[in-house]
Image 1 (tube, rainbow, N blue to C red):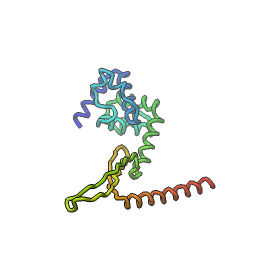
Image 2: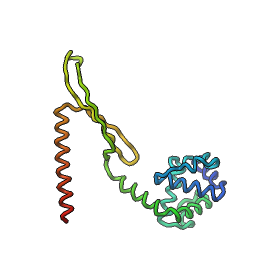
Image 3: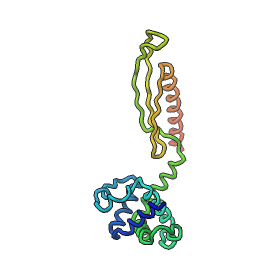
Length: 190
């Protein structure tokens, strides 16, 4: 907490233009845009990363409140430890970037409740030639690696499937595909 307070003091020591530039960089980092203009600026690159630091999280919290009520006096009441200069700059940046902040917050809140989604998959075919119990076997297996995404996190799951298990999986996915197509046809008819 003391470190955060020290960094807030660093922000207040910036001139208005640099502070606004850094705050725009925080918004850019939040919505997934490049923050290169911050990392290339000699003064600003010494500050915490505008997209992944604790400071950025704190500032985004203030930005989100500012989207709901862009009034410096009310924000100062909600965030009494934030210096007045920073609150005023956040209000000014919010005026310019409100729609982007609102859209990203909405997108994140919608995605927060969703389960894992398949981002990518990879497969390879292997041949098991022997095991500790049997000297000579020839069993083909498929290694299927699924990359799942939940929010900002990705997770890999690897499955080893025999020919029979692979056929069951393909049959199940074919059934899912039929149901989805039937639903799509039903939606088009309405």
